[in-house]
Image 1 (cartoon, rainbow over the protein chains, first blue to last red):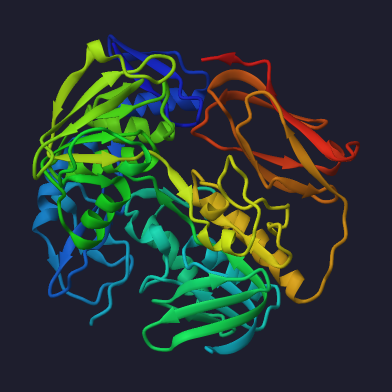
Image 2 (image 1 turned 180 degrees about the horizontal axis):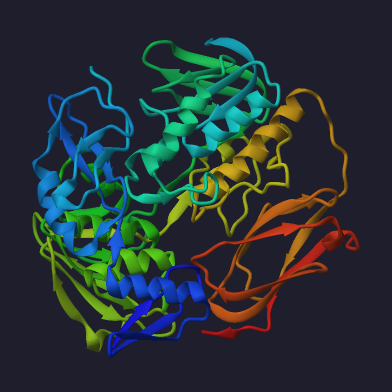
Length: 117
Length: 416
């Protein structure tokens, strides 16, 4: 059995999920959205990852995010990859910094503008 | 004597509140607006909030802090009537609407404004505000300082951290530190509940198995040049540490996330009345302070959970300041609130009874299955939490029958 806190709304139901013969028995949720949340969290939890990368020749970091959510278990591998990146200026919001980040099919994109000095 | 420039509107602060208010005032017809920002860039604290979750309500999409700010900065630059003064400090503010500024290019410049909007935001409570005994080594930071070091400057503050306080910035930095390879040993919270958003407790702590110790505090900091660890203990119902149960947490970094205080030195200078609970100016539903023609919005008024609320409120403020500048006087009956059961604070503190006003209510303690009562109006609250502001739209019929004070309370709930 897995227990998790629902984040769909501020109520924060404690949801219990039992895996019984390939079906999920979900209890504790007060609404159907909670069941969907719990199911996704058990089968394939995903998160948006945000971080910063270096910009060559500038003492200011560039903030970045994954353009979509990525599997939770890939977050630390993704961070290892992100730490190696050095980008050139200028950078525009939305610019792709790394395509297909650690095989997720999701791109890493810039979330701020950096102009050339 | 510094030179004096006449202008319609001065906005103090270029964060989300000041940006939205300036844009809204320009849209409402104000011709000359000066926006003053002490940093070298617009955007305020959003520039260092690289996490996502901003704009869910205002833009209906999830943005990071810098992206959210950039939308307003781009919009602002399309208004030639707004002049931005960067690297500029306001050093004096008078109730006569005189704003004395200083910067390295122009020296002292004084603005005589028809109206003023205060949007100075808030600052973090430091170690000195909570009196933790012990030595004074390096390695003790507020969460916002660490956020700047990591997200703007690209430095790691240490290798093993303890976080004191479970406010949202503390939770977010616990995750951020973990992602960058810092071991976060624990988050300690004095209260029996967290003041952070539920979403942040799950996605910042539970996701990374960072332990949250509720009803715990730091009793001592030790270490010579660099912090070596803290003594922690559970607290009793009066928040006094139970010293027989002290334990040690080794760390080279202590992160403080122990509350935010609206930054109101200028407001006090101008003789503006403050609310002792929110620590921000008393405002009416047009966000005018107790000094006529001086308005205030954003975290300088009360600390918000969500920037979306700041933008919403600042838009109202910009419009109201524009009406003041353009001489559209409104003479409507005002009522105040009478604070009842389980209410910590309400903003605005007074409102015009005609028209609808969104009010922001903070509860005193958590409870479930309660009913919020605002005069004759009611709203069911399945969960009440001091960490999540309650928004309520006051309708004229809720408050019309009251002469001076409208009672507000949260009733019938069960403490959780």
